[in-house]
Image (cartoon, rainbow, N blue to C red; front, side, top):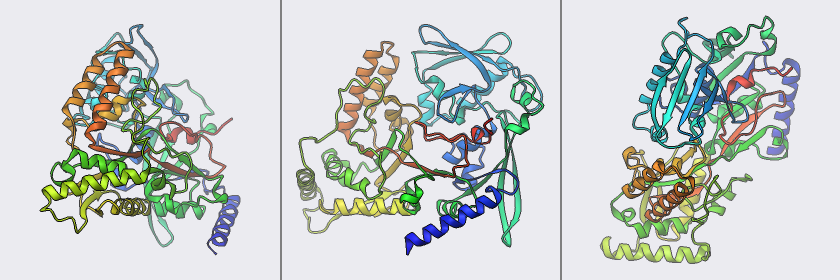
Length: 502
């Protein structure tokens, strides 16, 4: 019955699209998963949805294309000095939204402002190699580094590093928020249109409007996004994560519509409590070894999702191979026996000696059927070692927090920066932070990789983070959608989606 219903829904969608092309006005209708407050924000701390909108309406020196490559934006070209310590950018011949010329000095001020607003975030730690930003003659700025950073362009392409000033956006598209009547009620639309080429620092083209189309963006939650897609109301859904994945049809009929990304990043449990059961390093390791990661992920029925026991994603560029997966010589039953023994020993010593009842551990995670399934799976697995898993009432009260975060750049420093003690996110290690800082100051790439591997090994032994695997992201799209490409960032910029291939 469920399969028949899905077939009927798919047939209806095809008929709707055949009749109207998915839109009455030629616009590309997109459902962006998120909330209005989180997406339409001027904050420097952006949700995934807000990153998509910021990247369309404001530009940095560089940006990401559909393939996830770094390409020119406000800077038309750049050079890197031989020692890797200086990046020199030449800006496009363009103006700020208020009509004033964009100079090296004004671009420098905007970049410094963007960086300053990130103080206290992990992205600010990622930008630590920037020593100085200088305005040079005319439309040229230079970024000087304390040590080589091969991923500087990737960092500068982050939407949070867009150059902004009052009076409008610096990006290729303009936003108009519309409230319209729909099915007896009202709905909000974020309408995005390309600016004329000359306003984007490009040559004048009288026929440019023939090559682009409008985007009508609907900011909704995952169930509503899936419903809109199935009903033929949108052609593309962006921003799906584990929470809504069980709602997505993963059967044969979904082959042409479902796109699953498994980028490098963090997906696991961060320890927040430094007292009680989780204050014991051996117990934390016991919990980590008791999790059957393959079984945990198998229930989601998705390929290419890689489990790991390492806090840093395995196989990153330049990995010296000094850190391997843990407990390879133990099967899961032996691991759980050891974990149970550690927990019982701790309780006999510190928990009034009473081991007759399971100990309760609270976990903070998002709402959604996928997260509920994760919580259930964890509870089932850890019940056998004497732990009862319950959902925390708030993140602040949780003993464990589920981390689900895509890496800004594929290097160990990003992963270890997420647990830096200055961020106050949970348990941490000042010794590991010191090793990361030492590695960052190292100019020899081999020596840097060795220090980072040492930092990862030390961090692993602290067991303040329990890795599970890589993050999962998904999208839904019709065959009529151009400009959508799988990429290592699981970030699908809006402007390429609005371009009509010639």
